Image (cartoon, rainbow, N blue to C red; front, side, top):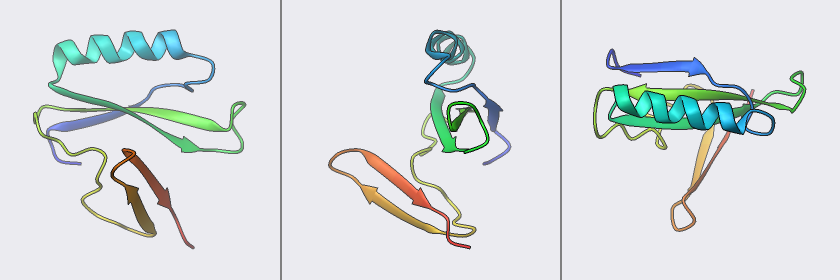
Length: 88
C-alpha cells in the first residue's frame, strides 16, 4: 500500500453487512477508491475478518497485489474472482 492508501478492520460480512455498507458509503465520500476484503480467521466467531481498503488514487488496483510476500495468487479474471493462498 502506498502513502495514499488506508486500511482498517471492517467487521465480518456475515454478521455486520449493514454496518459495512454504511462504512463503504461513508468512505466513498472521502476516497475515490474503496474496496472491501476479508481474510479467513478460524479464531473469529464467523471464521472471517473484514478490511476496508481506501485510496486517494483513483486507479488503485486493489484486486491485484503489488508485492507477493509469501504465497501464490491465482486469478480467475473472467469470473472476477481472486484467490490468494499462503504457503509456509
